[in-house]
Structure formats: structure tokens, C-alpha cells
Length: 367
Image 1 (cartoon, rainbow, N blue to C red):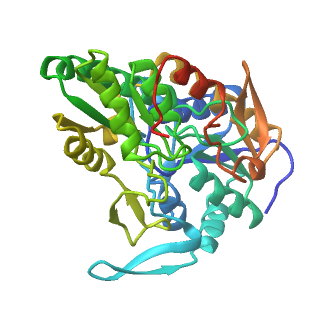
Image 2: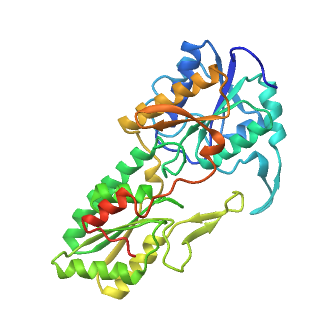
Image 3: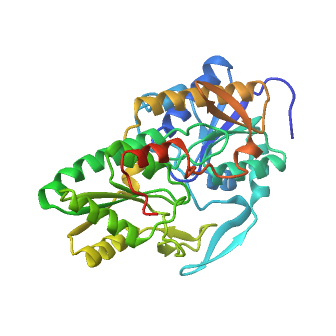
């Protein structure tokens, strides 16, 4: 399947959950391919679903004009369409799973692609690695608001999501102060607490609960009481959806049978609000930020980073350096082996500088 010489036609897709900056990458990939290298670009619809079902169309420069600042993805995405475990509904709420990866190989060949740029998080890039092993020429671009991908200092979309969390906490501070309440803010962050940690730090959260540091409700309530004893009549608790108590389990909102990872987290803020209110007799309110963190206009940082990622990904394609993921290291965008990038999640170090900084200023982690 591999061809020699300069690639002439590439595909690009966005997989997994959406986030601000995806369109900036699509724009950079398309413009660099056309302007710098004279390549043709096929935009593949709805992530790997489009690669399985041959749903794609050519992208010209006009198709990516004026999308730099737009959230979401013009190509659409899916977090259910794993080609190696493709869900097919056979009855109401019941699914069978089939290996449709060969369809991806055939459609790649039918479109006469020389390379495929896959934009996504650990799930999307893990699938990209599997497709590479089946002979496809693949380059990855790291995307996730969770910032949990190895080999890169930061993923695009994360900065925007942190800003959303910080803005929400700013607004909740004023109503918490007015009513002397405990406000519990639930962020995304399934296994990694970067979003809750950085958002909580920037917003002045009093208590931050993350997956990497188990908490006890007693310790959380004790931190709230100590603040009250110092005359602080309100508190802000920032909790990642994947945080869990010592010896406890994740808080599950529902099960999604069509997904490879069927557990959908959510609801820990409401649970904590009830527990804190019962223990302290203080009025508590829960705010679940949910998909607000994924939407809207990307920050300037994310626009620039996404543009750099897209352009460098095309440089890798042009040089036929496949099996790589672009990554930010310091101030440079470099190439990292795709296999290393998806080998493990990048988690918060409980003894790392961000956690230590938070502790120095009196932030509680409930431990």
C-alpha cells in the first residue's frame, strides 16, 4: 500500500469528543497541504465512521476559510465508531460489535490516499496506531481538553477549557458570597485531574478534588468548617468527574453500550453537595459544567497551537515520517512516536509543582 515519493492526496479526520481548536487544525492541514505541497485533501466525515462507511469529500481552500475561530469541527466526529469494534444496533438498546477495520483499508485505497491525519485523543490515536499496523500511513495530532496525552506538554483545547472553568468559578464566587453557600463545581476529567486542578487554581477554588488524589468526605467537610471558623462564609469546591473517595468507586451517570468504554461519568457534584450539606448544615449547590467546557471559540493560545500542530503534521506527511504524532515540547513542535504517545495516560503528579503550589496557598485536596 505504501507509495514512494511526495504524497499527492491525504485524508483528515477528527475523532472522539469535540473541543475548541479542531477547525484550526483542519484549516492548517488543508492550507499547508494545498499551498505548501500542492496536495489534495479529502475531509472524512464523523471520524472513523466516515472511514468505515466511505463518507468523505474533497476539501479546498474555500472550505476552510473563516473557521479558525469557530468551535467544534466542520467534519463532524464520533466517539462510538471504533473500526475494530464497530457497533451495530440489532434491537432497542442492544448492539453487536464487528471488526470493520478492513473497510477502512479498502476505502483508504479507493480514495487513493497517501496518508491520513488523525486528530484526536488517546482513543482516536490508539485506533490510528492499529490502522498503521494494517498498512495505513498515519500521522496524529493530539487533542483533548483533559490534557492527558503523553509525549506532549499540552494538547490544544485544554487552554480554552481551563478558561471556561475559571470563568465559571469567577461567576459562582459572587453568588456563593451573597448567599453564604458552598458551591461544588464539576469539571470533566475522567482519569486525569489537569482541568480541575488548573481551572481550580486559576479560579481560586478552596477545595480541589482530582482522580489522582483520593479524598474523604470528612476531610472535605473539615476544610469547609475550618474556613467558616476563620470567618469565610462561603467555599468553592472544584471536583473532576473522575474523582473518587478513598476506597470508593467512580460516580457513574449511565452506561452507553455502543461505546468501547461503556461507563459515562457524572453526578459527583450533586452527590458531594448532599453529603456536605448533611454533615455541615451549610447550604450547598452543585454546578455541572459538562459540555460547556468543550464548546465555543478557542483561546488565542489554542488557535496558534492548533495551527502549528496542523502545519507540522503536514511536514511529517510530506517527508513520509508516518507513525508519528506532533507534540509540544517547551516552545517547539516536534514529532513523537505514536506508539509512545498512547502507551500511557499523562496524569497529575500528586507531589508535582502544581499540587504543591495549591497546598502552599491553603487549598485542600480532601486527603
